[in-house]
Structure formats: structure tokens, C-alpha cells
Length: 436
Ligand SMILES: C[S@@+](CC[C@H](N)C(=O)[O-])C[C@H]1O[C@@H](n2cnc3c(N)ncnc32)[C@H](O)[C@@H]1O
Image (cartoon, rainbow, N blue to C red; front, side, top):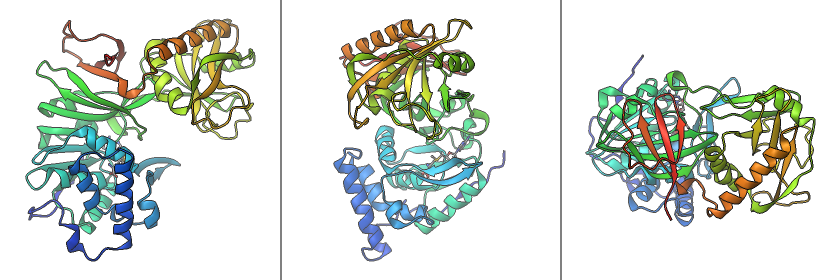
């Protein structure tokens, strides 16, 4: 593995020089103030250290090729494409704030970031851990690391070691770390990351859990288990290299749709599902209201963790030519469904669809369950039941779940709440609802 480690700034008197020394208040500084004020008002930032970091680090210097307005908008900015697919982006400031709050950094912490990208998050973290702390930021892409190096220099940030490497292996040379954070999605909790955590250290990662991606803060216990401290919804680019998971998205030919199948099981056969779609049944109105977020990470996560046939139906191409009522959330997203295709003659699908004439899909509103194929009616009953149970449980979303990670080779103590189990390449993920 090529490692180009560059410790920047031999004099580490402070991680960031005070903004006041960088010159008079500029348009960029005003834009930054507006961005941070908005993040605070929205409750994304709530600790002084995270706020101070956002106020100190000029995001536009990490995005030199985009207009100032875009650099300070609350949106992700793609910075690299490979074959038309985004392979690096500066994450959405809201999401970065949520994760920095989850990470719980303190002055003096040793931190490993996997997914250095533009270097902006590393700069924020360097500001928080201060001159007695260390930030090592790894990216798999040499050109991105070179760019991050320039951005950090332009922003006058010291205290970040940039490394070109596959972060799937962590960075053992700098271990142990008090915090390891991935800013790139993974469908596994790799043993290398756990091994490089200091006792009681925290690993924060966007973890794929059966179609939902969740930002999970995990604390390493003395028993070798990791227990989640907080869980939030997120949407990150996935790991490249050794830790790249298997692709779980399968096209449904002839329909402009795709199935996102569970990462830990075979799932339904898209060819049989394509045939089932030829036989639509009548939508059955559901007893609960749903909006986009409910469908995706509220009910969708619940369904994925409680029903073996759960999957997501995606519409990757906006011009699918589908009837308007087939997908509830707009053609660029999709919906959740139950599917079965174990038997050639008994394939079926039941999916959540909007009730005809429904307006804004982002707000909770009426939905129905629509069956397709010979098994569709039975699946629709099961889906309606699941909706009922989710509603009766208080409509839990991502923050209401907690996860315990049991690495391979570590015993599950009896007192760990079992909940629902997802098996990844190197561990078992035990999911349970937070009591109360
Ligand atoms: C969403 S971007 C990270 C944004 C970054 N933290 C910032 O502040 O700009 C995800 C990054 O993960 C990197 N990445 C993907 N697979 C990786 C791997 N195996 N090891 C290290 N970095 C990886 C990508 O090259 C990309 O730059």
C-alpha cells in the first residue's frame, strides 16, 4: 500500500490560527456565519466546541472550484466522479455537524478519519482536538490526498497527518485512537478498526443495515463488544477497495426499477419480480400516514429488521414510464416492499404506494399497499400488519434503535438484548429498540 504521510506544520502551537488574524470580515466570513447560525438554529450543532470549529474553518478553501454561495449552502458538493458515479464529495454541513456531535471529541484526542476527501472534516476535528491532539486522515485516492494537502495549507490548518491508504485496514502506525470516524459508508465493522481503538474508544461509521444507512457511534467495552451511543440516518458514498461490500442492487429488467436486496441474505429474484409486476392488484388503503422519511428510515428500517422478505424498490432512472401511483416518493427515490420469489409460480410483491391524488410526499399523508403477482395479496396483508405494529410501537425511527456489535470470536453475554440480528462479514449486529 502506497503511503504518502505528510505531517503538516512543524510548529503546532494551535490547530487553527484565530480567524481574526486572517484579515477583515469578508463575504466568505459572512456566508460562514450564516451557515453556522442556521446549523445551530436547526439543532444540528449544540456544543460550543463543534460550533467554534465550524466558525473557525473556512469551508470555501476546501472547495476552491465552486462558487462561494454553494460552498456555504447546506448541501453535499461532489468533487470527484469515476465513470459517472460520485466517488468523493464534501459532505453536507448538517450531516457533518450531526456526526461531530456524535463523535464527542475532546482536546488531546487521537483521531483517525477514513475518507479524508477535501480535508474539511479533518480540519474541523483538528480545531476541536487542539494542539495536544492528533488527526490522521486517510483516503484511498492519491489525487484527493494531494488536494486535501493544498486545502489545509490554504486554510492555514496544522495538526492533520494525511495518508494515502485503504482505510479498510485503518492506519496501524498511529494507533491506538480515541476516536475512529468513517466519512464513507461500510456494510461491516472491520476487526482492524476495533483493534486500533483505545480501550473505551469510540468508532463512528455510516453502517449499512439492510438498505438503511445509519451513522452509528459505537463505544468499545471491556468485554470486546461495541455498544451504540447514538444512531442517526445518513447517506454516504460507499467504501472502495478491500472493504467494498457486495452490490445489493439488482435491476428489474423492463421496468426501469431496481431491487435493493438485504446485504445478508439471498433476497428475491428480480426476474420473477418483473413477472409479478405484470399482475397488479388493487391498492389497499393503509391505516397510517407516511411521508418520505417515515417510509425510508422509519418504517423502512423497522420492516428490514422485522420481516425477512423486506426490500426496497428503487427508481434509478427518473423516466421510468411507471404509472404515477406506482412509487410513493418520487421517481428518484423509491419505496419499501415485501417480496417473495422462492418459487417460479408463486412470486409476489407488495409495496407502499401513495393514495391517488395525494400532494406533497415529504409530509405524512395517506398511503396504500399495492399487491403484485400470485403471492401479492398475502404479502400485502403482512405489510399492512407490519405498518400497524410499527405505528403501535410509536413509529420508531433511526434514533430509537440501539445496536450492539459482536465481533467474530467474541461471545454474546446473556444480558445483551437480542432484538434482531444482522450478520456482516466480520460481526453480528444486534438491533433493539431503546426502552421507553
Ligand atoms: C464523502 S467523502 C469524505 C468527505 C471528507 N470527509 C471531507 O471532509 O471532504 C468519502 C471519501 O472516502 C474515500 N474513500 C472511499 N473508500 C475509501 C477507503 N477504502 N479508504 C479510504 N478512503 C476511502 C473517497 O475517496 C472519498 O474521498
